[in-house]
Image (cartoon, rainbow, N blue to C red):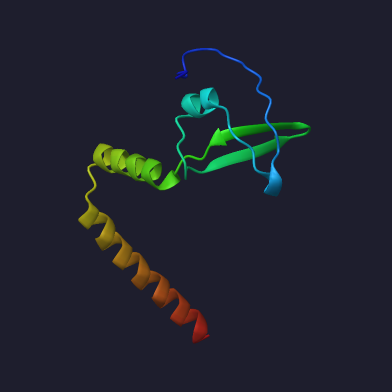
Length: 100
């Protein structure tokens, strides 16, 4: 497997089959650490197409949120309490506008 610290380049020839399917070469599957059922992103840049592994954003965002919360000393209970306060403020604001 190629890591982010290694520079690499390669060219692979693939054949389009019925239904637009291609077989991704084993070396590419290994480099991307992909398995059957994984999602990929095909990005177009002019005449160039780039195939990358689709990274799930929720786990990444959850980890970032946890790190920020820990750094700021905020608990989940703090967030939930703040959310309730914010909902009440929005409700009051909307009700005031509706009564004008």
